[in-house]
Image 1 (cartoon, rainbow, N blue to C red):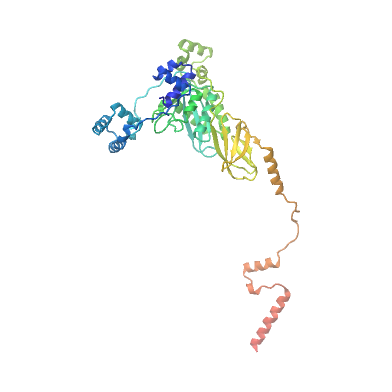
Image 2: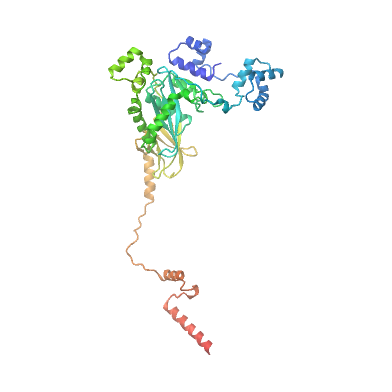
Length: 461
């Protein structure tokens, strides 16, 4: 039975022109097995054991032993389980330990500082290295996510800004970077990103295997905690961050992408490279002629990239669906990729989802409940265009006009001094009157004065 990695490898080699016999020898598999998987008659990982695995009965004991001593030798444990009637061989025992990741990780013993290093030779067109550049406090709000793809031989790199690091955005970013590079290498080397490599098994995710087969490449995961195994993309990320990101003037993600593309073409591609790189690609004699023709002592990144052979890309990107969340604006518009798309009126401030399937010329706007609100033709990102359907325009215009009034405006030049009621309230604030002593008019005031005089005269008598 093929593993997922073997299936991806076989399809990649077939697209590169390998014969069935050559692939079978490379994978150490039978030709009929290879032919069956390439024809789609078999799917990797579907075969199951017809009987229980005898190793499973010993897993609780082994977990307890590793909890007590993470560094106990496998041979010592094998002696113990044999005494407990373990029926398999030592090779099957160690394979069971590895496949189940029973030995716990010890960070103190996994350190890499101080070890010897050496430059890794990369044949031209053999490998693209991928990694995310996480950029805090992006000008457009939140964090920036820049996917970088680097060619180790020439040093050429390209990047694409994405809204998140989920798998659909990763696939969209990969396709965008590949088109900027002008093709794909035979293999992709990736970091231990969970969208590509399973954190538990270290193998290519089942959901990513069709992507690799679509582009006809093999996938090589980086060993854990071995960042310099993909030193080319690490250096490209460092260069792009310090040389471009720190001084970038864009305030939107679309403008940042335009500035990054311009920076890569006019600045990053003009970096000088060692002559040995050129000799690796075209040979010593041809390299000397190449430099003389261009009056240079050292080749540039663009020179090497032009000589690096890359495989052509598929006619369409891998069909995955990208989805982002947006709020409806005051004009019943939803912003997406630097353009605005209309929805029916009455949704001001509501959260909606914008869906776009790679390779499709359309987008969909979905409500929080899952109802389809609108569909539009997808415009070129960053163009600042407003796409408003005729029905949405008519409904919004009707709503706006219905809110208008035909009443005459108030007269702003009439004389309206404070009324007696207002003056009484003012007297209360000044403490000049009590509630029982409020004088409404002169007649009431006269009666109040006469009653007070009669009352005083009676007390004197």
